[in-house]
Length: 279
Length: 156
Ligand SMILES: Cc1cc2nc3c(=O)[nH]c(=O)nc-3n(C[C@H](O)[C@H](O)[C@H](O)COP(=O)(O)OP(=O)(O)OC[C@H]3O[C@@H](n4cnc5c(N)ncnc54)[C@H](O)[C@@H]3O)c2cc1C
Image (cartoon, rainbow over all chains, first blue to last red; front, side, top):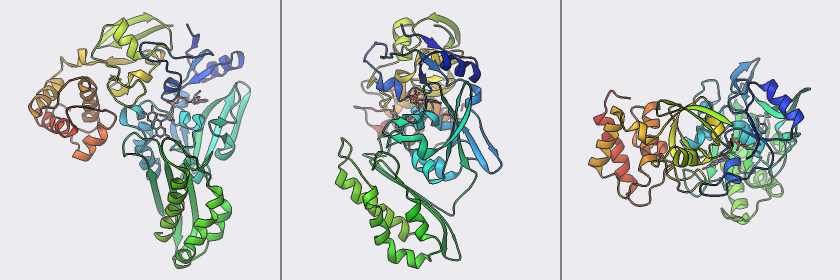
């Protein structure tokens, strides 16, 4: 029988983690599948389980001085139904999994699972989201691109819990999300692109491009984005091919059961061009 | 771990491995065989029940997660007027063939209509997108939901 802890509050959870090496379990939609052993068998867990999904400290959504805080254990359905969350993020989450799975899956679990196909990640990279990590001794704030360190790897220490994700309370003028999968419902992403931009007087004032599932982590380049600032929409159209090619070396897809590297590369470059030509 | 929860509106208490799948606990410990195992990885919806009124896949729920929560399976739901409306709708539209996926579809329909009593066809498809059927065909199931909405007007 695997040992398990079900703390009453976050402080107790952090204390348990400081004393024991545990497997943290939130919605369980990644863990229960990864550790499943089949019909009528208990899943295969080595370390004691630490249940956190019920902790009210981790289930809040609120805004505070131009930032929105999303608790790590907020389920995807509740993010979709919250009025302060930007529409484009809700649209992206609405394309994940299915309603029953979205009723269980947490945003924190999607981050901590750190899959290149994690569908909340392109948004979190595009808006420079921050992750708040806590242990029994204190708190640290980590930018999303430093939180995720590789395929299925994060900078979380054994005694830490991801408590909040912070995004800016900001809407963009242009919001484009394209997600390619085998079919519409319930398929993991082969390639995805999120494009955000602010435009005034026909010129680009801010632009963000984030690509999912085509490299070990989400691809975003502030250098390439910077080159587009203050260009007119016509200028952008003329250089769209050139810009998409600058992403070529950043896109390092793999062949897997879902798709081939060649297809992923070609589609990502086309999606970038499409976004730039339709601003 | 001792887990206390409500099962079809009755208070229950069980001492069990915290990581046991709710699917197995409902079938093996409580004999509720309407909860089916299909894929065992959250994709087919055959094991869907209502947890605090929302559809969830029990193959992915470690039993300790349901502490204090209310679980409703077909065995409890079948005594409700809402179920009667869904049953009649599904019978008239021929939404059931082998029946293996049906309890999951009924639970997902309840969860959908509870959130959105007047869904469009696209919203019905999206609401049931976590449930797979391999023999009846989806058109009849969607038609069944449409009829259930008519029969059960005012219930959701
Ligand atoms: C049928 C199905 C369809 C899916 N479709 C999609 C999809 O379309 N797109 C997509 O991106 N994903 C998808 N997923 C994957 C999964 O649902 C998501 O990644 C989900 O957000 C994981 O959240 P969870 O709470 O269930 O994570 P869990 O399984 O509870 O945890 C995942 C990992 O994160 C760790 N962890 C969780 N919370 C914390 C925390 N607060 N602090 C520290 N560590 C933590 C756990 O230890 C574990 O390693 C799908 C899964 C299934 C089963």
